[in-house]
Image (cartoon, rainbow, N blue to C red; front, side, top):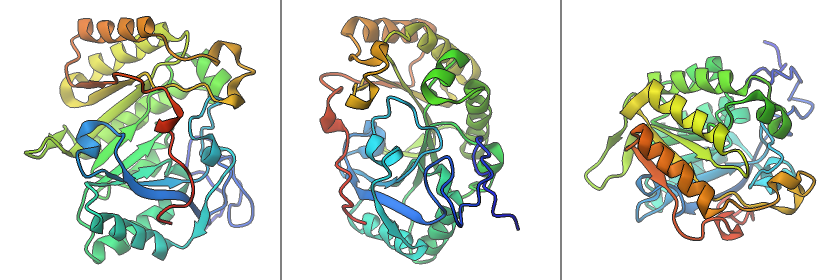
Amino acid sequence: MSNKCNICPRKCMIDRTKNKGFCGETYDLVVARASLHMWEEPCISGNNGSGTVFFSGCNLKCVYCQNYNISTKNDGKQITIERLSEIFLELQEKQALNINLVTPTHYVSQIIEALKLAKNKGLTIPIIYNSSGYESVDTLKKLEGLIDIYLPDFKYYDDIYSIKYSNAPNYFNIASNALSEMVRQVGNPKFDKNNIIKKGVIVRHLLLPGLINDSKKILKYLYETYKDNIYISIMNQYTPLPHVKKYKELDRKITDKEYDELINYAIDLGITNGFIQEGETCKESFIPDFNNEGV
């Protein structure tokens, strides 16, 4: 068996048993936080919270990343697969509504093992795969039967932006194919009596400064392709952190006018299965403290 990593669309083919891949990590699991999180979509967090597990490293590395300390600086603590399975069970004991795997792509093989261990020991709550949407279909197929809810980003329509801000040529086609596989696996959204999601796909789109036309193309594609078979979460929480200053066009928050225009466009399209953000969401309090809590 080859150790050359091809788990994500980067296919960097680096031997991660010895070196770090494009994601910034070896095969050794590194986790920066495992805790109840109240700031996901209402159907994910509910009143109890989502059992979020933040993995260090990322295969996309957007220049404006909100989780920069773990995606690029690689903060976190190295743990074993067995410890990861224990973390899942501990979150369930804390009454988490689900296990929320955040930036999990580069650790899929280890996560599969940990989930199987935990399920054999009584893990029963839904599993969420929370990713950038930049996924390999072959890798996603390995997760079939283990993931209940897919929570991908859909970041860009035009390659101009995916290349400039994420060094990811062909992002739209890759993310489209990945989304199709996610929907095939888990089907239409299903909720319990308390409106907590148990199965399905929620696609997140973060509005970036100046990119409203690209955002409109994404919403149009998503709705025309999937109608009410997915939920769409339209986000305004973009926070310009210090590392983005060299991209002057990104060094500002989203205006109310921009966000309202995008929401009105979504309504005009006919989108009803969706989530919007209200109030002062674009502030650093929405970015967790990656202090190895729960790890």
